[in-house]
Image (tube, rainbow, N blue to C red; front, side):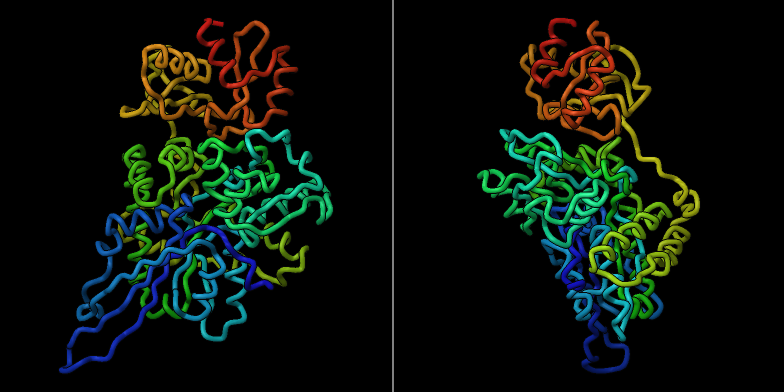
Length: 475
């Protein structure tokens, strides 16, 4: 049962090393096959799989001298759709590296504890949110349900074993709800998405990027975000210890490739989002809400203590459900390879380990003619065929949006930030609380939060369209 609970993070990077016998004289070349499994559609893992593959970054860093002088590397990329087969393949020694979300990673580590041939160790983080954003629950856009409690007794699907499943279980525990509060069924992202669109289920819970992807594609509305569990969420990379000990330089090379992928992403996030769409099929606007400036995920390979503390909390959730016995995440961490990668690149691992700063929205607001001073109160508009333009506030973003539309510009999407939680939102999916004097307009993910804030400022709640009309009228 435990072995099957483990799935998330659509990205397992795996190096299956198989040496073939020398065909002839001493010094003949040996081939080491590096099998790399990715979960391409999980946006969190882009810098640990898709980008590395497409930009050939691993080839750049693989060792070529010393004991590797006569080794030929062959890369075999594989794409996985869930986490359990990644752990199963690692246990079978077909994959050496794997990428998954927090809950399945923990199950991976726990499962390997009973493996006499090898253990697994956490060697890097792919992306994280200290606020817990990423996982979410969506309903059909026409649904009468606006918050989690509305789903009592309703049919809710989630990929069992995923980080989203963990989020649902944690939310139920936090609220003191019984195990049968929902009619909870296991459905993959693809099946759950289709069933939600066809109104065969009442809600679907999923991991990055589906709780944003489905609303963006026009048929869903998010009613719960992982930030409400107040527990960090993250993806990471695990390795079989037998492989890591035999080929440590290859492990370091892979970690250098992750660092390079992070740098490439941040150097031009718009281009990166466009290329990731091309490579994975996930809409660029959805990629950008997670991985762009002030995005809902921070790409950073360093293994931060708050994430391991969150993993310890995850263990307790799994133990309370009878899915796991004793497991200490702190003993499972091994950042020695990552430290070596940073040292060889002349980078400061200790400083990066302490930092929890994402890269942020910046620049000048050309509509309101002022600089961006608070990124988490700003906004952005992605002009079709043009730039992603920053604005200093939600009000300025709405005003600029209305102005662009009036001038006949086509807009891909606009972004604003949740007033309470600071997470990035699609503006057309947000609820806006507007003060009675119209001097303040505040965006929110959840209708109940907008209603509470509107009552506090003696205002009212507006939809995106109504908020735009207010911007046009100059209110």
